[in-house]
Amino acid sequence: MTEEIDFILESTEESMNGSIAHLEKEFLNIRAGKASPAMLGGVFVDYYGSATPLSQVSKISVPDARTITLQPFEKNMLQAIEKAILIANIGFNPMNNGDVIIISVPPLTEERRRDLAKQAKSEAEDAKIGIRNVRKDANTDIKKLEKEGTSEDICKSAEEEVQNLTNTYIKKIDELLAAKEAEIMKV
Image (cartoon, rainbow, N blue to C red; front, side, top):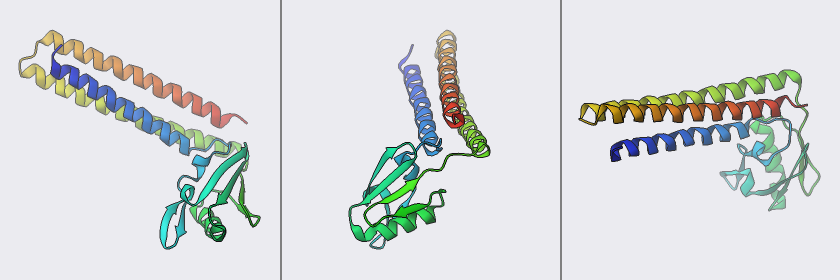
């Protein structure tokens, strides 16, 4: 195959990998009832007038599956951290014992689990759409090369390769979704 087609295939695979990576990141934000520091990823604390990520003002640890503890680097930040968690509206009620903030992660209700599973399906569908758009762009580029004089056989085999990549990545998305749904629905 020509260099142009190799480049198209490489960039297509790279873009598809990016879609998978994005999906995995989105799945991390969907909590499954198990405590994780990633649950607090979107919390920003007012630290001397600037919005600072929670992870930069405290040590976040998970002593067990239902508890998150936050140990501020500065004691005077306890109130600000507690306030930031409440303002973030992520469904947690922080408890301040004077040294650390303890967050108990409540178990998920069946209805909430279904909602989270729907959210996961939606994210997976968005990733599939992204993969299909990458495929469309790659096929468009291949057709341009065909018009510019690249052999029809080479272009057809390149289109088949793009389709194989698409099928592989769609299958990966389905596997990731199945795993996430199982994690969410596990009581």
